[in-house]
Each structure stands twice: as C-alpha cells, then as structure tokens.
Length: 112
Length: 110
Image 1 (cartoon, rainbow over the protein chains, first blue to last red):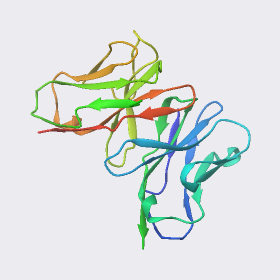
Image 2 (cartoon, helix red, strand yellow):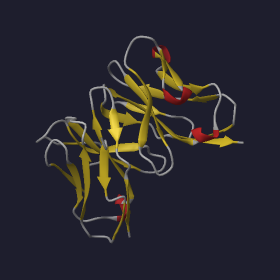
Image 3 (cartoon, rainbow over the protein chains, first blue to last red):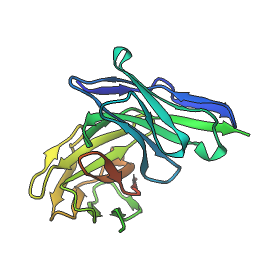
C-alpha cells in the first residue's frame, strides 16, 4: 500500500536558521514525489516535485529536496528560514500528478 | 485564469441536512479530485474523476456522492450531513505533472 510518513507534527526554528522537514514514503513503483505548502486559511501550493533524474530538486521560495531511494525519503530543506515560511507542509507520493497520497503534514513555526 | 474555484467558502449545516459543494476549473484538465482535510490526518481522497463522465471512489467515500457535470465542473454532495463530516474540503484538478488546489470550503455540521 502507498503511504507517506511525516514524523514531525510540529517544528519550531529561529528565523535565519536552517530547516529540514522529513518525509518517508512507501510506494510499489517508481515514486513521483511532491512537497506542498499551505498557509493558514489557504489552499495548497506546490513547492517542488521529483519525477526522475537529478535527485536534488530545486523549488520555489528557496526550498530544495533530496530523493534518496535507499532510504525511501524525500526530505525538504531550506538554508535560511524567513518568518513568512511559517505554514503547514505536506509531502505526497503518486503516479505523476494523479491520485496523490499525502502525509499528515508538518506545522512549521518560526521564532523571531 | 482563475484556476480552481470552490463555492461556498464557509457553510454550517445541521445534522441530516443536505448540500452540494461546487468546484470548477478553467485549465482544461481531465482529472479532478475531492479531498477532505482534518487535523493531523493530512488530505484524504474522497472521490476522483479521471475524465468527463467517469468517477471513482477514493479512500473515504462513505456519506458522499459526486457528479462530473462536464469537463470543467465536479460537485460533491452530502445527502444527510453528520458531525463526522465537519472538515475542510478541497477540490483539485491535475495536469500530467501536478495537482492544482482550490481555496477550500470549511464545513461545520452541528
């Protein structure tokens, strides 16, 4: 069965500090992996996606993620967090953009 | 280009009432989806439609029905609302590579 695990429900980081959000997946075929961000009261916005090729993918807003097949992971990183990054982040896996399975989400709080 | 639109934004229902959530997309996508979002559970797929005229159940279809009215529109109906259906509902449409989400409908059932 397909599943996504985001081990951290909440993470708090100081503004300017680095960030890593963890994502582990279970998928029977070649995974297509996504990170979405949701600001309070808003819909989901795509940050980045991995389909194939270079395992380090760059996204919007200075985010990047690294696909590690051996660890079934797709962790999201940002070198320096801004207060505006406070939001909920969702990792998802699927076949292309169809029928995605989402993780439970990680809420990021940014301390000033 | 509005993307994915949903109406209404907020709704309060009493137990047993019915309502329809509307969704439309202007990106000419074949596939459309309805999700519900509950705290600590991420987004769970209720129903999806791979193309006009077809619909299929997702992970949590009980208590819901859908209609793919045409390529643009995909509605979600609650025939007899229950408190367990209190949630935020998102509609999405997808190209081959990505899903695009609407702003959501916050539904409370009392």
